Length: 372
Image (cartoon, rainbow, N blue to C red; front, side, top):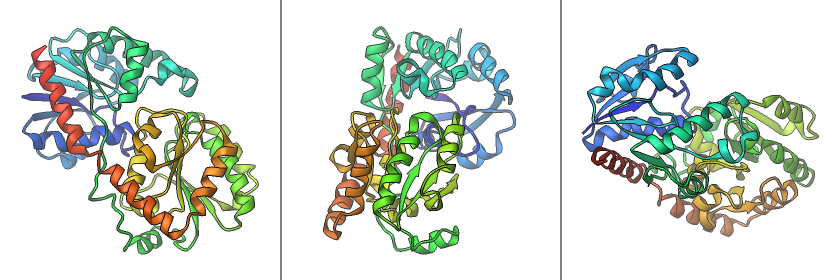
């Protein structure tokens, strides 16, 4: 089988959907699939280094408007598309007027269900992209059962779906904390400080506003605990920045920015609680990575995150700062025995989700598309 995997939308720093696409680019070739990575013209070197056993087709323009135009109207008729059996568009949009079997990944349906969580300019584009892909792709991949159900509700007449849940690198995200103190010191972080940890893009749907409100309550009762916020800025950050600047416990809020991958497991393990109060996701990968590290995880009930975490996470209602504060306090005040049991349960839950299983489901989707 010959596959073209479009990686042209992946930013330099892998996070969220970019992490997912990067894992596919690195792992699919190991299954025997002859893989070509479709990249931007100025973005070949890192993909050569990232996945050296693949071919590189650097055919996509660098500028975003040109890239979107090329992806929709030109990519499907390119020599690369004509030379492969399957084209995989891993981020909602697919080439139009293509004769090549096409697989499209739908991460979530929030552009349809909750457009207020996104930039207005993106809502229009991704709504059209999802509607087109859902009815024109040969096979759709969703990254959770949750998204598959939402797809049935929002677009009942859609292409066949393969659910390929995301995975976690169980050799990197482990419960072994032996080198954590030194790792934090190397990154100039105070290893002795107790902290609550958040990881995610700074944007409205992540619930950082609710976390800040909850932390104000927690900080009143705990004179030492800090809030460490890690992640890249997205959109709508002005309100979040204003909330941080005016926070009553500002001196105990630490901004980490983008966290290097080497430091992330230590940060997850050493936290008193990993809090991910997102209003909605397609999967919520930080929750799974935290569980793999045996961390105490607090996330949102009635979301895909609670579905992924099962009984391994502590849950609070979406948008309820008072309940979130109560649940965080529960995590902070667990006994040593409770923490040990929680770590075992978290790790066991995470071990269900592997990248090998995810890749196997993707290969199944490619084979289905070839037969369609």
